Amino acid sequence: MQLKVLGSSAGGGFPQWNCNCGNCRAVRRADPAVTARTQSSICVSENGSDWVLINASPDILQQVRTTPELCPARAPRDSGIAAVMLIDAQIDHTAGLLLLRERTAPLPLYATEPVWQDLSTRFPIGPMLDHYCGVDHHSIPLEGAPFHVAGLDATSFTAIPLESAAPPYSPHRHAPEPGDNIGLLIRNESTGRQAFYAPGLGRIDARTREAMQGADLLLVDGTFWRDDEMQRLGLSPKSAAEMGHLAQSGPHGMISHLDALASDTCRKVLIHINNTNPILRDDSPERAELAHHGIEVAHDGMTFNF
Ligand code: MLT
Ligand code: MN
Ligand code: ZN
Image (cartoon, rainbow, N blue to C red; front, top):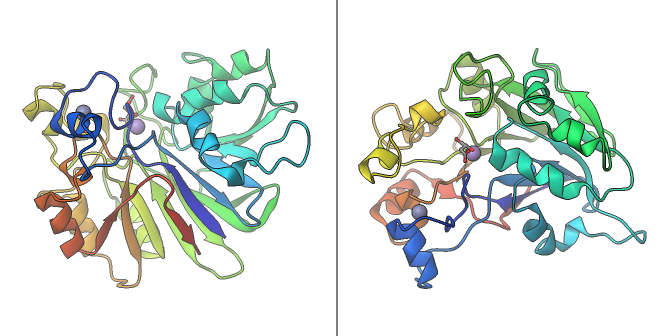
């Protein structure tokens, strides 16, 4: 099966429309050490023409335009997006749902109950889409049971509830519920190989560690290098932890967790990278440090077979 990174940046994208941090300015002046990135989304397929879109980014239209696989053109109106799956209800993962409204049939949407609640009430994308294509909601189980998506019969998905953060608009923002944020174990039933995808990962508990141990490919939270990154730059009063993201550096950071994994064949890739993160510069010392630890940085269009 194939897994493709459609968007490797965090909310805001890279460059972010109103940001003048060093990285965003470098993209605007075409500095060859930085590459623009769209907002957070991946897709998976068995046959190369039917895809599960995991997270519907506000940049979905641009992502479809640059991904011919998502346009198989089997009918006058057609899309390779067979279903959408959500890992949380954050705007960077859900606003793109509104842009899929021209479908002729209801959109199969896999989301946990807390995420579907947010999208049915405070950010009513579900009720809004009922006036267009409609949504066929499938509830993602949280008890560790694998589930399947029609059209991808040899692929199983397992949700791992994560400690991260519900969106600022959610009534769960300060009263987290299991299922506000999940990671996904994506398993090729034919080969037994697995990917673990968790772009919003605030803390690595025992269950998350176990999921990471079993994976051949990790696509995990690469949002911030430092916990106080936004504060130091004067861009936000919030720490990475307050936003539900585990920073890479530091004694208990993501790098130390990735180092501690037993497997040395597993590919370790950071995704959902905020535009302030120094790892976005190919020539930065932070990027060299990642390379030293065998950790890669996702870019749009990156493809994996497993
Ligand atoms: C996050 O990942 O923390 C959010 O998507 C931030 C945002 O709303 O852009
Ligand atoms: Mn995000
Ligand atoms: Zn920036």
